[in-house]
Length: 136
Image 1 (cartoon, rainbow, N blue to C red):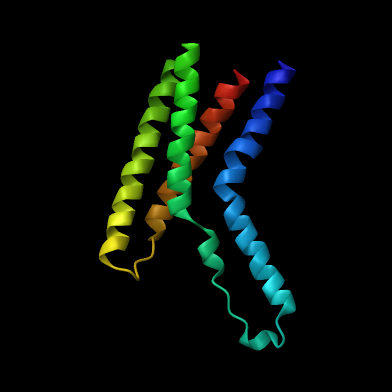
Image 2: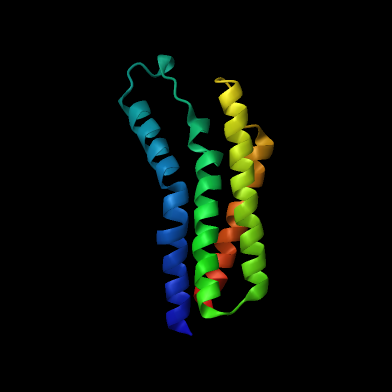
């Protein structure tokens, strides 16, 4: 059982969180480095909120859901998890396409808090289910 838990934790961080949050974390570190190097600090500006990337989360969530679904179906187990992963992956893609459509119609469009919130909820649910799949 310990081996499965170790594998599940490795999956969560290396294959789950790193692809979903890695670019945002690097962007924040870049902003911090710019802030440290800026002189004078009074004129420093940086778009910190851009590190929250619901487009990347939705796309990454859909990819993770499909990968996990394939793993479940190849093992013929966890049908309830497979159902929810299929639904969540589909929801990620539909919301991503809707957001891309809005962005395509208006170049200055920014994702509203609802898109960020739903994307975060879907990705967290997919990550938890991924942990279950790799821990099972």
